[in-house]
Amino acid sequence: MACELKQMNPTKSKFCYNFTSSDCYELRTGKCSLYLSEEEAQNVSVKEKTVQEEAKVMYCRKTAKSLLAADYYNNPNDQKDSTDPIKMHPRHCGHYVFTGGQHRICIAKHLNINSIYAYMEDPKEYEELDSEINCDACRGCRGSKRKDYIKYKDLFLLIKRYLTGKSKSPDKDFIDEDYMNFKKKHETNFYE
Image (cartoon, rainbow, N blue to C red):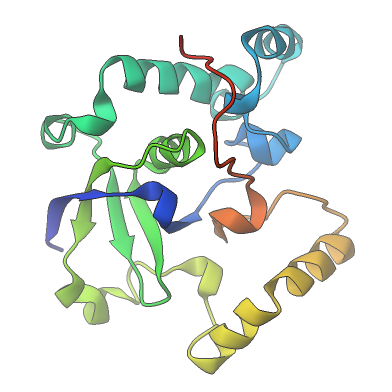
């Protein structure tokens, strides 16, 4: 699989994340930790007990601070030199799936960072790889079925949430905008 380092705008893209409430604070609580004030985050952090590290209130906050301090999103060499680069794969449905870096992309999108570098699959390889790296959120929804799904997506999600008794959290493999709330303007300067 050939991947090229490319620049992209994550705020203009839709991603298929493979998060659960075990590795995402927002899916666990309904609010992204990046939108909390430092005081709110510290209060939550003191009370957290046996939560997995990636779902803790401070995980994405610390990661974001570190990435921003290092100017990570503006430096293509951070991807070239990394042992764990961001790797994305555009799918026919218009979504991107990951083989690395989904937390970093989610942070960039929540912070409205409009330019990042990531390794992307060569579009010429879509046909042979589509079965290998699927957009699982669209699994089974091809062609006109996908258009019908998009048209009635909110109704489907509402019914699914009602029937499963879950108000917010997906099972796994979901489109970011279906379950996450991205603010157009980031109000909290937690990283300063």
